[in-house]
Every structure is written in structure tokens, then in C-alpha cells.
Image (cartoon, rainbow, N blue to C red; front, side, top):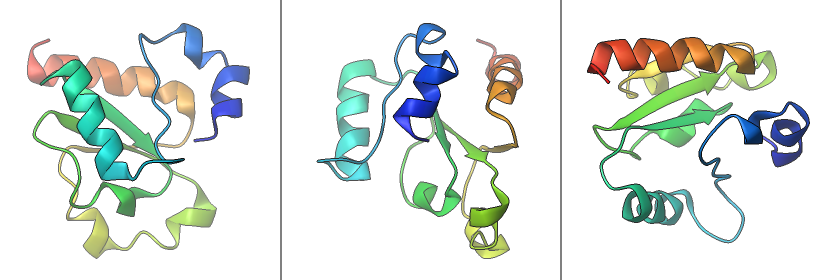
Length: 108
């Protein structure tokens, strides 16, 4: 997700924290810093490339694939089967439905 799109859509004002992965750190380094900052809190990771989820995260990570047809052709069933707690959305505003579902499932 591009930072610019999140700001224009008004998402920065709706959440406690939005972390943009990438840049100067690897995904694993960023995730480690996230866990140091927030401990074992449930973390919702939204990405349009679901293969980035594979082998990363933990039992308190919920993965949300922001579905785009352009990148979807690279997301094989084999990759998707390796992602626990996977949710799929096709518009960013659907993240609120996912958040509510996670709250209900986890009793939060």
C-alpha cells in the first residue's frame, strides 16, 4: 500500500498506528520492531502481495490480502495455503469488516 493513498483516503486519522513496511529495513526487521513496540497485541498486516506473508508474522498476526487483479495472477494456491488467518478484501474500506470479524473470533 502506498503511503500517499493511505493519507489521501484518510486512513491515518482512523488508526492508532500505520506502519509502512519496506524502505530501509527488511520485512523481518520491521516486524521485529513492531513486536518490540506492541508486544503480543494482535497485528493486522494488509498487503497487496500475499507471498510477502509467507514465513513471517506469528500467532497474533492477521493477514489481509488487498486483492488486485494485476498481482493476483502471481498468488498461487500453494502460496495462499501457507498463510494462516488470511482475509481477502478488494477495497480498503472492507478492512473494518475484517477488524470486526477478528474481534469476534478472538473475543476482543
